[in-house]
Amino acid sequence: MLVEAAHAKLNLSLAITGRRPDGFHELVSLVAPLDLADTLSFEPGRPDGLTCDDPSVPADATNLVLRAAQAYRRRRPSAPTGRFHLAKRIPHGAGLGGGSADAAAALRLLDRACADPLGPDVLAEIAAEVGSDCPFFVRPQAAVMRGRGERLELLPASVRAALSGRRVALAKPPFGVATPEAYGLLARRGAYRPAARAEAEVAAWLADPSADPSALGNDLAAPVFAKYPALPAGLASFRLAVGGEWRMTGSGSACFAFVTAGFDLAALQAQARLAWGPTAWTFVGAISA
Image (cartoon, rainbow, N blue to C red; front, side, top):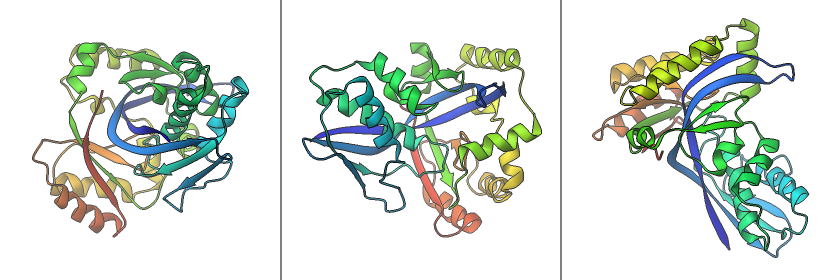
């Protein structure tokens, strides 16, 4: 049995700079892994398949784990068959990259099980075939994400050190926001950020990484908040109840704030349930840059 952790990511900032002819969007985003993770195991020698401890997660061919396995075997037909089991901790529809993280973990597991491994550079190429942000999760380290998400520039070691260990609180309502929906809402507005401005803002933060990178903003937040007013209403109540500057991560619906070591998770849980109902999800963890 082989096991891999599939870490969530935070889009600390997300600038959308335009729409491409292929329908994807160009972005400039600061991304970092979290210590929140799913666990994916692989038992070689069994028939292909996937089980999951969360019955709401599809375990059929639509799951990115099995799609990643198919993509891997197109490159390495001799890869062993086997059974995956997914233990979910990252909520789906959250903008935390859980499905993409699971897919990248599947690629790493198959490469470990293969007598002739492909290596991380080729895994990143395969990951880009599976999903736009999948390459980040092959070797999850804090980076600037560009293109449609497949181009990664690792942050300097000193900047990663400044981010690593910073504590964050997260909250998510019972509903998710599909990534295509969020980008579609933005496209209808046509409110794109000039690429030069986005790059200048990231460069300014890199020069002072002790600052809050989420202040650079998330261009998907305004259109998503306009459609789902429960999100900004909830975040306003969090600021009053527990403090912090709350922002949406990725395409949502999860939101986050940097917090101190003594942050009161119980107070956040209570406020999230008041704002979004008894199934609201909350978490406190740290960036593992």
